[in-house]
Image 1 (spheres, rainbow, N blue to C red):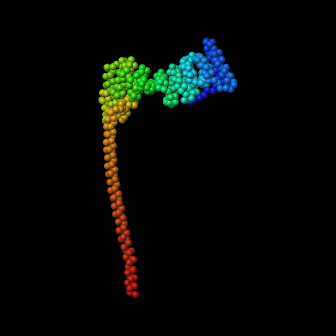
Image 2: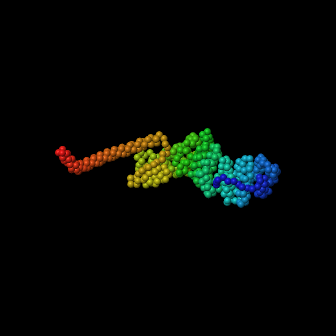
Image 3: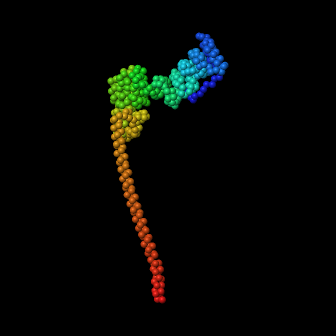
Amino acid sequence: MPAPTNTLLIEGSFTELCEELAQYIDVLRKDEGSSIHAEVLPLLEPLRQQEQNGEEPSLQQRDEVLKKVVAAGAVLNSAPEKEITAAYNLLVHLIQQSSDPDIFLSRICTYLSKPVTSSPQFGPMLAISILTTVFNTLSPSDSSRYHVFLAIIAVIRQSGATSAYEALKTQLVVQLKNWLATWELDEDDEQKLHLAIADAAEAAGDSQMAHTHVVEALQTIDASEASSKESRELAVRALTSALSHPATFDFTPLTASDAIQALRTSDTSLFELLEIFAADTLDTYDDFVSSTPLSSISGGVLAEAGDALQTKMRLLTLASLASSTPSRSLPYATIASALRIADTDVEKWVIDTIRAGLVEGKLSQLRSEFLVHRATYRVFGEKQWAEVQGRLFVWRRSLEGVLDVIRSERERYTRELQQQQIAAQAAEEGAAKGDKKANGDRRRPHQQQQQQPREVDLVAGGGD
């Protein structure tokens, strides 16, 4: 699989390596047709002279040699298993010395996308290994990587190698977004790449990855091309994939597509089915199917998906019930009626809906109800905004009630604290007065004893 960029280190001049490869191709061809070596030898002489004279070899003359060598390169697929990688690496090394490697790399990718006849068992892995080497020898910004990557995907799809697909999937998750930004592909090339990935994923049994990239391919369709035959086919493929895939419940990316909207006139029944899955319930779906059999829609592409569609519709119906219930409490009887199931099957369907990520909540067997904690809105319009507004109003009133309780408690606590402080202050003042009085009583006898000698002295003084 693609990895950090590296280089091929092959010793020898361009003329020496070209002559060697031409001779090797002649050996593989076993004298069938003209000799490639004989054809390129006259073209190599001027280049050899330039190399000997220390001059810069002519790129135009190199291209003339490579045209003949690359044209005969398909025979490398019949090379012995131990030699095929080295032979292709040599050819790639020579191509990188041309004036425009892209011209020749596309031919190499075409060859490697075909069976390796010398190794039917290990041929696909050899081809993937060679293409990966080519991919990694190119600069990350080189748009040629796009064509090489397409060839890698094609080989993986044709081979059905599980390990190779898993390695590819890892690279797609980590690198694809950066590659697309770097390569600057136009809409057609980007669509081609997404569809190639979708085909490989489908061949590997990865329906989720396949659906993801079909939708990505759908997004590349320009509004002006939305009604074309190719766009219609892709839109039908994306829509039927979304409807039948058990893990796809969000149809918003599809309804936003111009190509999907164009189905309103070209495939009326299929588009109506989309609208039912996007917003309606099981009752509407059953009425639709009874009047419009699935086998009659778009060539019967959904004919075998009846059970899967009904199962998904039940899950979506339960999600709608949960999201539109003001009390957040759903009785089992209400669920059983809406889903047209027995009361004993309610818990099973609720659990399945929770697993699908559409709702969260708690089952109460004692009260035979489902307590909804969270529910997914399938559509979000005026009705849903009104519901949200109502719930926000109730929430606000609840918060106001809580704030009133908190405010009352805080005021009561403040009053009690003030009363306690006043009482404590009064107690302290009372205690202070008591201490002062006691101290005064203790000081009076002492003061009298001090005053008596003075009076005696004054009397005595007067007598003298």
